[in-house]
Length: 239
Image 1: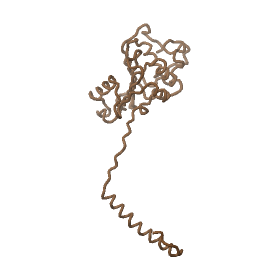
Image 2: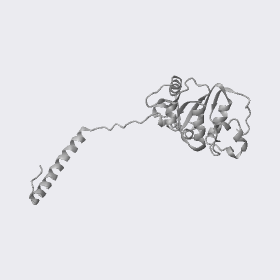
Image 3: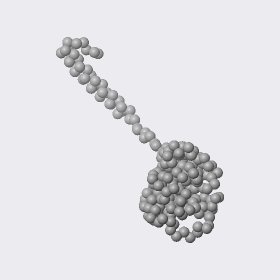
């Protein structure tokens, strides 16, 4: 970012896995505030988290008909301050964000944290919504030694859901831009894809029956005590 090599070029496909939350000069380099890659957003990415600086750099290099997909930590979805300002600008002003895809934890060798893929397009076909996909569920990957791994069918489901822009129960959701604005441009996937599973508690009839019998025994005992108190007080037993 400090020494770009291809500022005169534009690319129809950009795929990247930049270093997560890397340090960069940010506002310590006065040239960044006037750099065309960053200046229009109103804020610079934090010095200790260059995630959005990488996004801005790649968007600058993206052709008008291009598609960009980048792997990032989940923090970029919801962190505030400067990152919140940049995120809002990308969505509300530029309308470049096309999809947010949550991945399982521990699928990269360099880190075990869960990650996400952000997909950007400058000319979006469906420019009034964003697709959210939660591919982090136990059914959507396998364990392979110490790592988690996406199978071919898991990748196919992600791609098909993205292409078809489908809402699938507990897996994906197509959010209109107004809904994202109502969430203050917070892209946390759980705000859009409800993956809550209510635990089914097994009911054992024998245990229920035994509990009821015990309650009956205790009720008889309590009633006798109440009747004794009523007799001592000279009042009528209420049952």
